[in-house]
Length: 325
Image 1 (cartoon, rainbow, N blue to C red):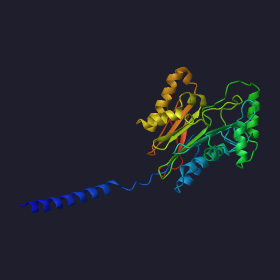
Image 2 (cartoon, rainbow, N blue to C red; image 1 turned 180 degrees about the vertical axis):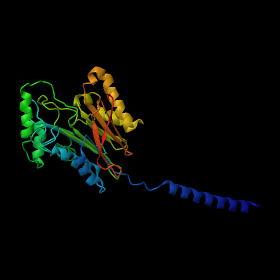
Image 3 (spheres, rainbow, N blue to C red; image 1 turned 60 degrees about the vertical axis):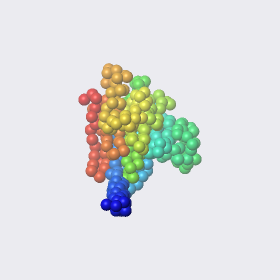
């Protein structure tokens, strides 16, 4: 074989190799499959999930889904731990806290808000229309009025009656019945793979006037990282604040834990810091959702439930695993 034949053979092989490489690259760059949307919320919140699912199932944005989902219990007078109809503080005043967060770490929060039914929507506008993350008290209320929100009385006759009954003994201990519906935290993954979360509450019944729990605190009651996952909390807010619970869970997921493993580790960390005897008195629960649509939940006691909505599990209520059975 002369040198011209050798060169011709080399060029043919090079052309063939280039073609194979190009085809391999094309096949490697598969069009990403559509993500199955999913929404999860704390407790038996099927109506909230249904509102969120209406948006997700139409290929809507997860941020819109969690806001609309959270607005449902906020407007429900029978829900005595969220929004309208929430049990008041020791002074007989209903005070509300809420926050919202998207996949890009944009977030908004309001705390100690009085007279506005939908603090989650105020929180979203804090995120979108101000340079701040959190507004509280009168400042948050002034901002709400400037954005067209209407002030109204949130203390229902039923909640006022319960408060007056409590006044007979006036036990200066924040009331929390772990078997009763509590704070709603709601997390969603949309069909574009974007995560968002929201959290809203009227806080512990008969709390000290001015008390703020974990629900409006980014990293405690709620945390979202669009590259990893999201987590939310319910129960005694002071305990979630102590360990920055929701942020802790997301960081555990970043380091390879599944949502279930991360929730369990966060609860065990809380118990190790507070001690077994103290922890037995506490009602604390976490709910997590990762970027792949996997869900985890864990609580101190055995009463926590969560609601899941997806193409495979539509508005199903699931009993969480717990540390103390």
